[in-house]
Length: 161
Image (cartoon, rainbow, N blue to C red; front, top):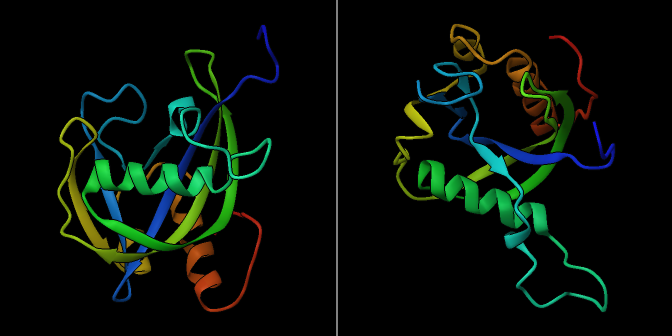
C-alpha cells in the first residue's frame, strides 16, 4: 500500500422499527458480497462535506451522520434518527483497497422502503432470531446482537455471538 493512511471509509445503519431490523440483499451485480444480506450504508465522499460551510474555524461536524442519512435515503428510501455508534471494522478487499466501516444503530423515522435496484434487490424487517436464518455477510449478525444489547442498555465490543 502506497499510503498507509488512505482508507475507504463507509458507514452502515442497523435500523430499528417496531421490534425489527431492516436487512437488504445486495444486488447480484455488486462487486463485493453479491446476493448476500446486510444492512444499508455507503461510503464517505469528500463531496459530503467539502462544499459545505465549516461548523468551526477548521472542522465540519456530524459528517458521518449526514453521510448515513444520505446513504439510507438513497439506498432504501427512508429517513432515520437517533444515530449512535455500535462498532467498527477494517478490511483489505481482494482488490487491495483498505476499508474502515463504522456501524451504527438508528431508529426508523419515516418513509416507505424503496430499494435502489443497483444496490439491493430485496429487503426484510426481521427479528434477531429471524435474521439468523438469512445468508448475512459474516459479522453482521454479531452486529445485530450488539445493537439489540445496546438498545437494552448494555454496550459491548464486537465478539462472535
